[in-house]
Amino acid sequence: EAEPAVCSRCRRAQLRLCLERLKGLVPLGAAAGRHTTLSLLTRARLHIQKLEDQERRALHQIEQLQREQRHLQRQLEKLGMEWVRIDSIGSSLSSERSDSDQGES
Image 1 (tube, rainbow, N blue to C red):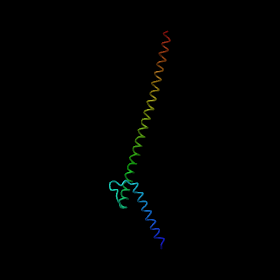
Image 2: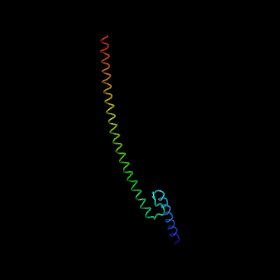
Image 3: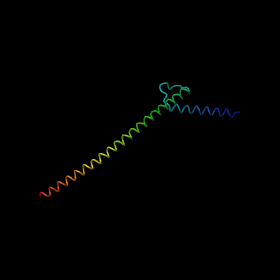
Image 4: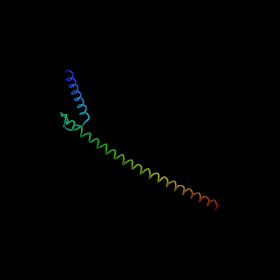
């Protein structure tokens, strides 16, 4: 019968240790004095919800930035193709000019 009492003490000690660790992880605000287990767990739940909201917003922002990056990449590729076309037109014009210059001499 002594064994269940030891296990119960161990569980309570483990619970106290876990609650102390939780106090270190959860922002307790101005009333950081003595918290009840319920108030600590409530604050922990609210903190987790806040972190989940922040994560959702961050993921949404990442998706938006990836879409914008793809759009800008397509625009850059399009401009690159136009630049090649303009450059090739310019070089064909300059070769035509040099041909006509040679004909005049």
